[in-house]
Image (cartoon, rainbow, N blue to C red):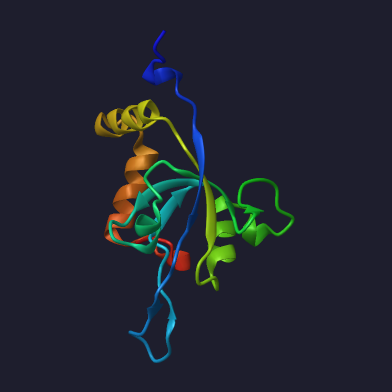
Length: 142
């Protein structure tokens, strides 16, 4: 028979995020990637940002950057979280290649429903903090 939406499996995709140079300061530097992460999951992605233009979307899980896994144990305490590892890996890369796992549409719809009902305060906090630009450490927020 027909596959149901809830039977769908996550899919893996590779995206190259082309970061432009930011010339607003005294010296050019790489512009922001355009995402904020909650763990290794994309909590927000700026529409029109390099990440958005590459194809990264809300709820994508970043598995690796240029072949380096961002989730898992780290002997360096400063890189103990996926967010810190992601920021460290992409910091000086002009066009990092991201391997992402995209959840099936049903997972996205479920997350939106939970956030809308106020049951998932962690997600709402991450999204609202990024909107307020409070989480701009590492230049990851859009």
